[in-house]
Image 1 (cartoon, one colour):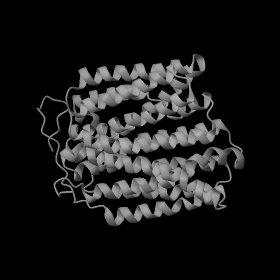
Image 2: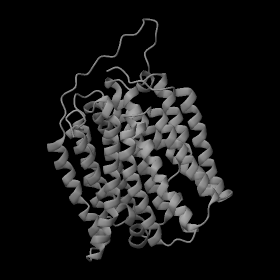
Image 3: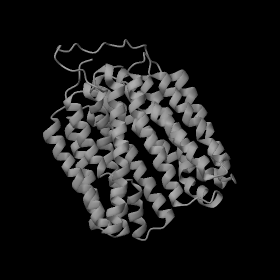
Image 4: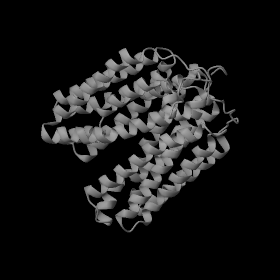
Length: 398
């Protein structure tokens, strides 16, 4: 590959860190419900409280950490700090004797995610030329997804060798330590000059928040992404749909693995496309695929059809994940990139909480097809907003 097209080393390092972190996290996450129920005597309500508190904490901290990252000459300390917090908290779950300890450690794990995510995505934009940002975010998401595939396999392998559940949790510390070594020696970041805010007319009031400074186009983009997210429930409902079609645990796990492989390949291809076509159109295509899969999930009931749809669903991620991040980087000036990613990740995370609650309520009160159709309809409303309210994004001046 020519020097002109090569991605910066820092992007590869951050991708490797995400792969190792997801490997560590996914060694634990699939075992957590059984661990809570059988060893700690906690049920579904405790699991819901744990995951709800953890994700809400991460979402709010992503906004704060993005703002802090814009005030620092280097983003690397926040990135390493966030990975350190998560890497330290995660294996300690194996020592828990009561479920509130798991709650505290899961929240601490997500504190680390909240601290690192926005500065990390801003750092990728900082070191990557405009015409390669799609590829950079695509590669990063692909490596992240690869870690999510390898983590459960590593846990299964260790259990097969006779490790207990607690010992698997302890073993998750190994990739966590490797993450810190990779980041400490691999991330290359020059100190940033902290640019002053552009001058304003004397009669113009100062924006009260960084969101106000990011401009109307960014805010409209954020609004339509939040609208889409309100219809984008947890993927566990897709697995529940497969379960109701008669698939057992083993077949569902295999179907999810096939989806993860498709998702990993799709984000690599989608990232490259995001550098070659209108990013707004590619994002719109992803949302159309999402809506089509959800409508089909409502119409079809056979297990083979639903498994096929689950695999095809990975294409939506390929079109949307790297493209959304590239557009956010395009619209934000360098001095506000951390804040832009903070508001983006925070808003998506916060909107995801009622999204799953709404989906589950519609499923319970009406039917599964009604819930999937509702998700598709909200995606189409968001698509209209993307077409008429946002316009073709143009890169912000640094």
